[in-house]
Image 1 (cartoon, rainbow over the protein chains, first blue to last red):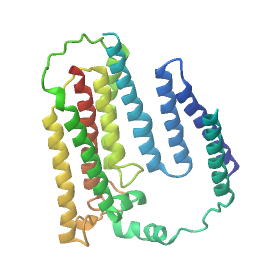
Image 2 (image 1 turned 30 degrees about the horizontal axis):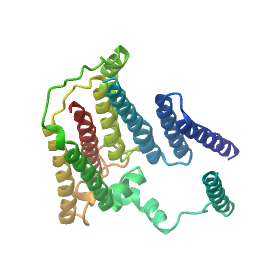
Image 3 (image 1 turned 90 degrees about the vertical axis):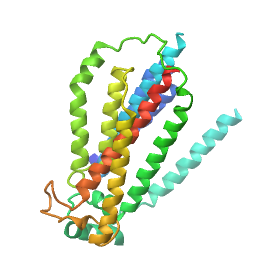
Image 4 (image 1 turned 135 degrees about the vertical axis):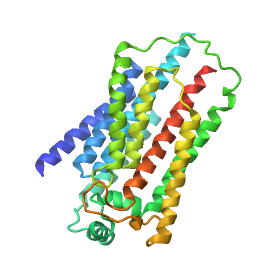
Length: 84
Length: 233
């Protein structure tokens, strides 16, 4: 019981930190996207701890997989446009 | 200054609300009425080892149909909007930078594995966590990887549309068959529920989830393909 509470606390702190990194990542947009994906990944681990593996899978596949890929895809698009 | 103060005030208010919620939270000792019904009757009536799947596909199957419809509408509208100005010129006038060696080789290695895993997730939805939506999203991320490694790759829109509509139609037909041969719309007992815990069990659930997986995968893929093809403007 104490272990799961401790892990939950650790995960929530890590989630908040990565969310703040995603917002304040002034250095590069790539780091921001990765941090947003990390927040999703930690959320899916959190769902797993809360005994909801189905939700965890959706979150991992869509939140941290598809969305991160899509952001990188669009970022590549936008970068290419800048150089023209 | 005032803006920052308002934000702080809002955050403090939210914190107070959540603190109140946590203070009064007592974990339930037993399942509530609906959950207890599902937990007691799923194995016997539906034959699915994963209760969540039994609820999504059979007990609340109509909601799943609604969700798939919403996703279909989104894909259709994105296709409609993005194909508007797309027809005028076709030649790619921009020189694209070649994708990295790592990405190309990694895609070649990983793509079949990701597709296989997606198919595994939606065919085993009644036994293990996961199901049509998750499997479809995994398949779509394989498509996205393919697009990332080769941005000029063209997918057949016709094939995507055929897969999407055929699986949607089959889903509704199976639902209607349930009204004829079993208890009601989307009843899974049109096929025998088989042995509990085996791959070919739980009646029509594996078929319905495979169809949902194909449909969701095709819808996500069509969105991604439409997005990637607008670039040639």
